[in-house]
Length: 243
Image 1: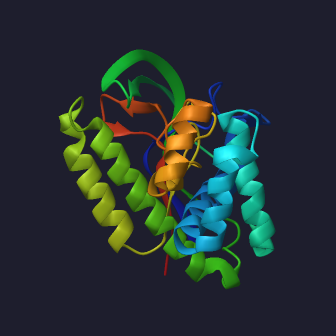
Image 2: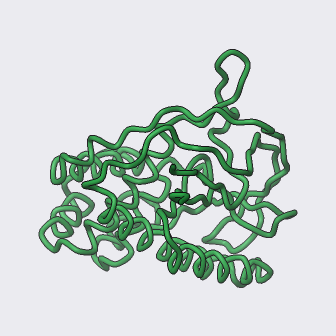
């Protein structure tokens, strides 16, 4: 049995969780997207030819906006590894969805910008099906690598403005990187349309520079939702197989 455990409060979208028959659910597409952003970062890190292809895309190949660039990079990943197209998850019914106040933190300016309320969920829910067996090991490595990189980059951006989050990020990295399962970042944890899909470009100096110059964004999302009551950023979860 595989269980989805939300380590921090997680909203599904700006307008809340969708409903079916009046009951909220987490769309399976959220989990698929979370795995694909981790897989994209892992592929860029470990495949020099693919990394060069993504660098050319950022430097001159793509002509749209940052959100479209992230989508184009994801499509290139699926062309490289068509087996990832088998990643599909059923919608997960949820209980105890609540409205909670959250703040928007600007990682470039190092300050809180505003506060708002989002519909959130914290807890665990059973997945009706496991990951495809042929993808388990690779996705485990990809998700742990991405979770560590994202947590590290995020803490570096928050440490001066929100020093109280240090304990959260240290605990998060310890649990995700050293533990079993598949750590993910899912849902509406940033209002920036590219989400975390551009993070791997931070390792490619020329690509990171072109990203800033051509698209006006950085690899790490500029805006991140933060829960003042929990002292934590939003959207961290883990899939874990219960024995």
